[in-house]
Length: 171
Image 1: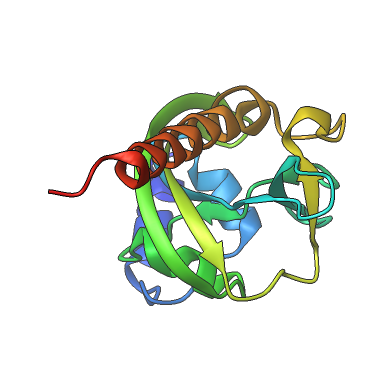
Image 2: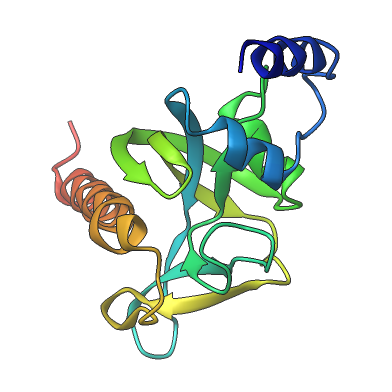
């Protein structure tokens, strides 16, 4: 075991911290430390129905929970900033506002998710808008139970604040 640890340490020391490590290596390494992830919650009001919708992307076959729906995001690679995660995933955003952290146990290890509210320049190819009240059955549980509600609460608070400001008398 000592030799395996030594070789693994040497190999990791030779990786470029600006390049993704790949999901199989991340999965093997993630059992050890607590990992930092960045999740982006994109909300909008549907113009026709008025329903609040969230953008979800479907995970690929090589990712954890293949086929599951989730908010765009990923585990940060070494040296990567949260706002760069989406760019690495091919998602272009115009705004990225920090909302809070969420700590959880996941299949790949312990995670701290930095939850952000984001505005998209375009919907990713694997993405679709879903009414917040009608999420797919295979939505990642932490996104359904924690991440999306955190963003919905912030969204409503922001709208209430703007409404109060608009109705306040001018001085």
